Image (cartoon, rainbow, N blue to C red; front, side):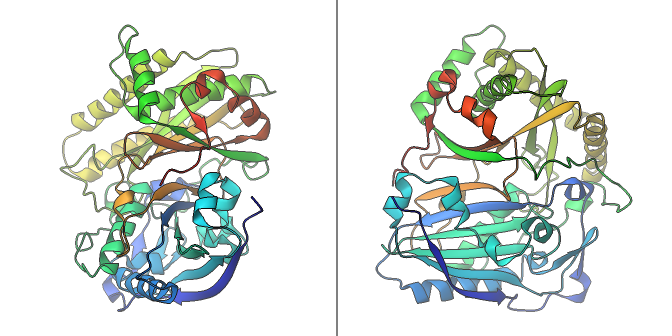
Length: 442
């Protein structure tokens, strides 16, 4: 297939349909928001042809409903100013684009990462890293394929939104487009800084100066339901290991593959560590609403191994399960308000992170978007036929897990240094359970 060519046909600034009240003009960021790198949380939604709706009507409906949705998600139309968001209604960017040399079915035959990136609106900003830290907070791109299918690429600054947040936004926007104005919108809360302590500009978090200078590559791996069942059964046969979840099984398998691939390359780091962000809303449902927008996660080192160490999947799963139980105990032991629990978790998280150095520790991250209702995002022309997510610009040593359409399998985009990926993608144990970038089945 020839290289896909995406042509921009329009760009607009979309502002909230009604002004943000003066008492909501400033949003305080939390300490967790502050320490996150300046990247976007990204979601892709793909839809097949609907003969009843024209491209012009689709674009109009998306823009109109987006404007209405922004009245509830008002910070997304603002600008970051230090450790706060100035909710000034300056608006979001909406890009219309088309693909004339490729149908959606052709795209689905081999959905490469580079082609996916063309479906994001990042080409409208000069420096994506700078843009994610300052302006704009929300970017949308609707791309129309020659067959009538379409893709919606959505970028929300990670400084203000985690995966659950972008899912809530998409759910509300889709509901608004369907004419269900109150569908999932009314209870939206921007109050993450009431849980985690507010950000302080004086606090400086260690950064990896080489992060944007390494040459990395991203590949897609797909685990169907039967292979995940086979993997879970294998792990559960080990002594003192409870039957793992899908995410635990894939995380452990990836961790083993990461360590094995890195061992074949030169590294000066003493320890490889695995970091796993956890959505806290479901952990503390009595205190944290599912409609809470922000970075409401706990992120810490869950696994580690020395230079000469080897990973056994069963042991990795057991350690992951112990870390999950340890977190639940920490939460349950802390009585009182959500801010008390948030302060305790923030102190624990920052203490652990500040012990690490990029000279001695090589971090890997596995982030799960599984169980998010992204496949329910109908804007009025049916549910998406394929959904995936990631961060942008690409972030090294990262695996993003998303449900397959049947909600039983898992799709993953993995980003590693090129020399590590060459070994990782040929790992026979990984390939016994995962397929490398198979066609998307619609």
